[in-house]
Amino acid sequence: MVGTRKFVVGGNWKMNGNKKQIGEILDFLKKGPLNKDTEVIVGVPALYLEHVQSNAPEGVMVAAQNCYKAEKGAFTGEISPQMLKDVCVDWVILGHSERRQIFNECDELIADKVAFALENGLKVIACIGETLEEREANKTMEVVNRQTAAIACKVKDWTNVVIAYEPVWAIGTGKTATPAQAQEVHKALREYIAQSISPDVAASIRIQYGGSVTAANCKELGSQPDIDGFLVGGASLKPEFVEIVNARQ
Image 1 (cartoon, one colour):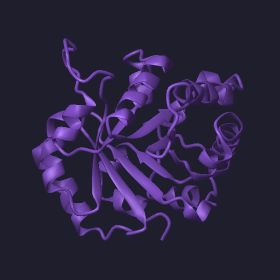
Image 2 (cartoon, helix red, strand yellow):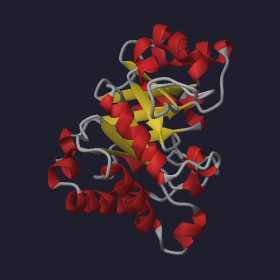
Image 3 (cartoon, one colour):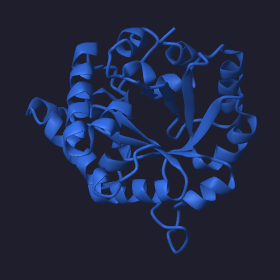
Image 4 (cartoon, helix red, strand yellow):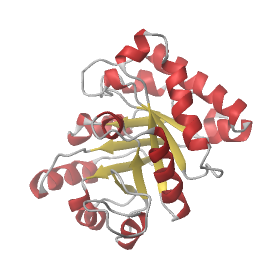
């Protein structure tokens, strides 16, 4: 079944970039060349979504880094799925560890946001992952299964969902799960989805790995049977992102 899941690489720019730097990023994306068999998505600060959407090379999709669970209203500082669709943005990243850890977003809120985004025509990269303390306490699968189950309570159609497994201890730290460690979690997560949601969803859903992915380790990570792509942080701001996109070549 692995051969039928299209490799998908996301670049999460986080709170980085200005028009000059974004121009440089778009230049190296245009220069590429990017593997045509890989889906490429860039997660852009809200202020620059429309600019990047208008200037991104063909085949590079644009994602918001967050959106709320309502169409409109008194939610200062938030943006809605409908606003994203209005500027032709079709993807959103939800549940990133920084939203969970820094902004205290709980499993239920993230699940509500995922469901609302999907209902309103967005495609979602839904992030899950454990902290270092949770891993050291052997709670990795307990945590990622719990986070996945919360979303499963609200979502019935998984067609437009990509799951990003991001061990929090490996994000921006330079530490990376070994390919074997990453594959172990991806495989166990897929088995959990088969049991708790459906075998068809488990076989078709794409699970990205995120956590200090670089040009140096992407090929070995990308060769694992249950790793269907990456969600890349800091390296997505650099020309090496092209090499990461091309990990399966």
